[in-house]
Image 1: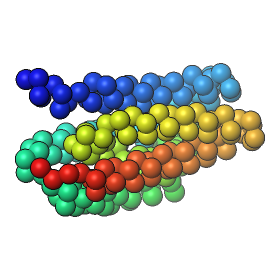
Image 2: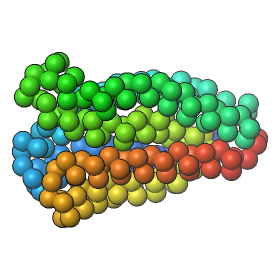
Image 3: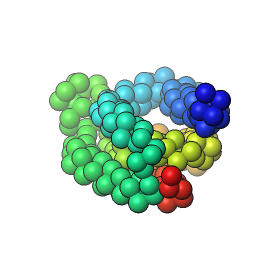
Image 4: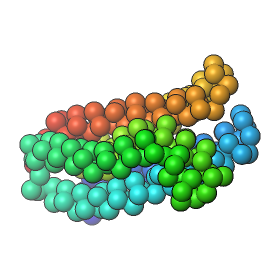
Length: 213
């Protein structure tokens, strides 16, 4: 039992704080927008993100659950298997998301207008800008499993911390240099792309550094 506790000590130390940091960051963004702009824009942003992230969270959570079960048997895993799983997962997630995200980017305003009414047309416009960021977020979401599997939770925590700081820096930079919420949204989307590219890269590196048992 003591050996098992030592083997899993990184889970409560880094994995739980990492998940909490990611969740708090996402929930706090509308508060920052409210402070820097106004309640209307904060509400519009929150609505747009809630709608376009809903399928991302549902599907990615299911994929993550299946992946955790697949990587649960440490005795059967080796570096080559993990690298192959990572490559196939990234390709599959990108393939699943590319068409819906392309439709969102092209017809976001019209879709929100049609489904939710003309009062949410601006939210549709924001969703068009955020679409590319959500695309990479969809790919990156389940990859945290590879950090857990390879015992690299500390790296995941550092990445999540950097990504949270980057996210808020994007909002502040957009506010200070452009003072235009559409440009702030562009900065947010760009930060989502960059942060998830970092996650994809380092999760791949974690697979390559795994020591076969």
